[in-house]
Length: 224
Image 1 (cartoon, helix red, strand yellow):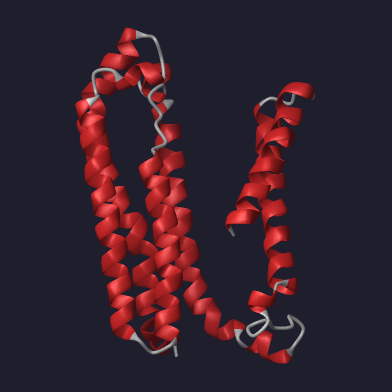
Image 2 (cartoon, rainbow, N blue to C red; image 1 turned 90 degrees about the horizontal axis):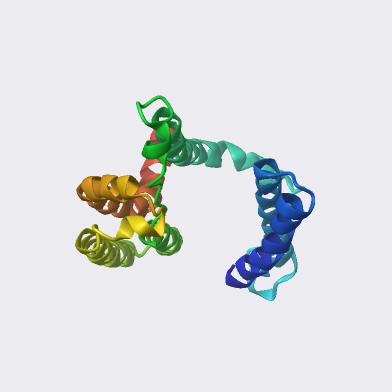
């Protein structure tokens, strides 16, 4: 997955430059480029699953009858997961849209931060979720609990370090987004709230997928 992500990044940068600057498609070109990059990554992962020797023992033919029969078992598990991911991203988008109806919309949307700590915890949560699923499949529930504890500990350490650094640099961090003093002062005032959001996001990003993986066998039994 690391190599496919690097290949996708190398594919996305020139494609995005082509659509945005060379063909002058603007933001629409950026959206189209990210869509192409997503499908390019899906293609690479599909080829890896189909031809890699690492997946030889677990590879299935998508045209076998047991694959379609297992949809009934996977659907009760996939639906809550999809809803959880959609609600998470819709929350971000709704907040940005609501900022447009505030008294100073340009000022409200200027300090729109995307923190690396959140991306780190999302990646950590995805990796830990896979580990938890593997341990549950092997019947080792203690190892699954240990994986959740380790992921949560690392995530909380990241939350503390990130929020502390942001709070200490709250007087100057606004200059990373704008040279306007009004924007810098505004970000200084909202930094305590952002630190609180970092802590809550780090917890949610790790536990959302792991708790779902840990309780998925129970959910499957209840669905039947």
